[in-house]
Length: 497
Picture 1: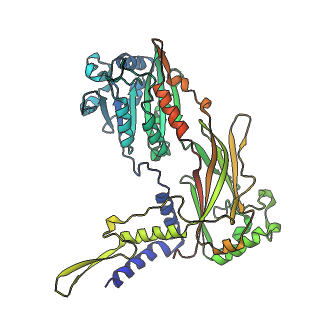
Picture 2: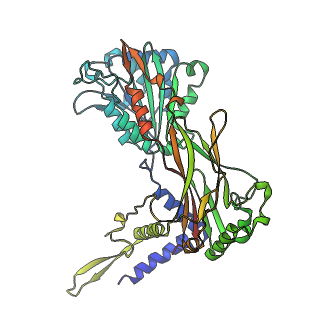
Picture 3: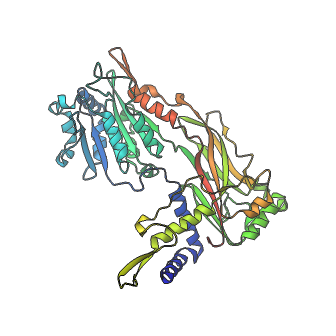
């Protein structure tokens, strides 16, 4: 009954993905993206939400920041027009986040400098609710302008100066791969914060709001008027060593191109992967076996220092401020199972139904979908994680030169290279199908002293206010990027099925 519909889906799939080399690359690129999702927004809206703490004391702090360096004006100038939405924090039950009329956007500097807009209703600004709202709406850039003092009617003394009111929100935001920045202005004994929340997809680009803001305030007078602290779990660099080789050969042993021959290479450092598709699986495995035994040593290019290196010339740079990467490791898996699940997921989305009459003459609709148990294409789901696939322990290993080195300025790098495993297992190698080599940050040391948390704290009337600093300090300590996947080599063979 469904033979025609199923055959049509298979034919369309083959035509779209398997008729030429680029199709395989599209499959792996899609698989990589969907299997490495971090929870961050898949799309980022072209808008900026700005949350204003208008509690008692904020009026003169904002005015001082404007008089000293025009910090608010610079922000408003960058988000002027329809792009910006403004919200006022209020302690009114059920209306803690109040959206301001569009008309105020054009005169926001006047609005926040007017004392009449600061009243008792706003004195207990729910900063924690604002932070939670921003994290929930993670598909846009947001800015929270506040003095960092969470006042609560139910707390003795109103303000608990040491309560880490944003720890959970900061942790969630950063765990999704997003970026968090603090622009801090000292006003008398206290602080004014511009806290920038930048989604991962925007943080990876150069035109983010925070980067534009830092550039617009970069002159000496303004830069001296504030402190800037940046927090992220993605502060590492991956670059390719340029030896002037053709792109199809770059990063591969010089013997690879001569003996493997029919292959294609797609490398995306920005997305954190490279894909080598090899048409002749047996030929590659014979080459790998001979490479491990040293059969091609005389053919290696000594200028490249490539002995025992299958893949190399990937440079890792530790750019973390709060973490010191101690070492790296790789994990190797046969991922043919999850990959075939992904192919079935794509086919499920193309499946069609067929209508027929049953024995009683009633029309029935049957879903022609042998790839999933779902009842319609909208219910097609692909779920996988980094554990998907069969572990391969004795095929590939991390080259001994791939160690973190630290210079006298505490700047650390590593030259990444992949070699045959120490206990190379011929049977395991010949028994593998599509495989992936995942590069991980293995051990990380939390280095709190590398970032000046003191600028996030202040003393007022003999009380130490540490709520903001403790929120981010505790979040960063808990989020240490231990066992973080940073790069993947995919190797596929022939047709995916």
